[in-house]
Length: 446
View (tube, rainbow, N blue to C red):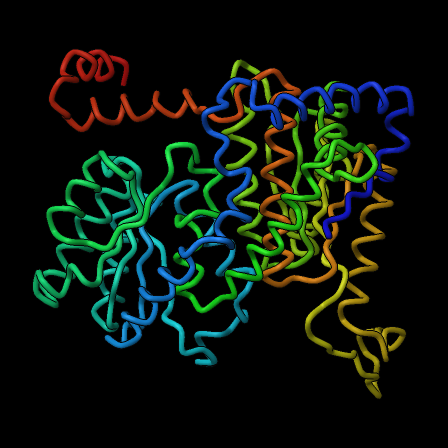
């Protein structure tokens, strides 16, 4: 179970302040639970773990996996952007052996991603790689018209049709899209693609427990049932109206209290490089949910101990605008002991007999004390180990915390009006019909 430790904030807040903010957190929790707040038509994510475990979706995902295995597919290109790829990317990175591909330790197809950028070089190099593999694709888009994934899908689709023929290509394309409308839904019906539905009530950044995240996770050979069981456990825990037993309430309350004290940046910290994309997923979740109406805590991330040798100086001695949230993994899944060296030229024989992870843990504790002494409050979010179950716990914990926290800020957690501004400018500058006047005005500014 996810555990939240707020002890690293004790010297920055007092009991009365924390008790007052807990009352506000409970009010926001009630809004979320009773579904009475802004954006309440986007709360389908709240019960996705339990609903999915009870249904037939996982078997349908496995049928796709088995069909493509029979075709000897060894590369799956997952096309999506934002919440349509970050959850799956996080799971693949977190649950894989760091060197699985180099060692060829798995029979599952490799999962790679496209549609999350507009880099011509990236897409050309993806095409180079596809030519060496047996390829299928999952395209994820509610509308089918979001520029980045639409461009990537147009290119990958053409490659599949040219390489395997149109009929066979249709069997190598799965679309995750709207149930009834949109360009991708229309194309899927026209071409006979297998489709999975993105429910109207589930927004992209809350969609990791839907087909958006689960299908790529299954195709990658990971234990999606365990992931959902972990999420279900947190679904139940985070539904409790309890300030002492609900970690989502505790976390949301403290981050808002620190924000109210002028700390406008939250730094997500991990000491395990497999969690780099959990941080990326978290940044989108909180950034897109809270950053509006000129409000919000800016989400940043670092990976220690690596970044202690780059960003550590700023965190220790720079502007006092931040607090840290450390995601701790208490037990390593592997064991490696440091041995004594006869010459001891590096002076590290005092570590002989210690596990490498003990050194990592002591670095975590030492950094915590140093940063607190330097004026940086620190929260800890801990799980026992890193596996599919605990990753599911973390996904759901942060989703529920985000909903509570955004309502505490007084914003709608489930819209994203600000992301449209750049799109309109881009369309105008690219010459999209209907944007001629806007294009002329923009060109005059450049």
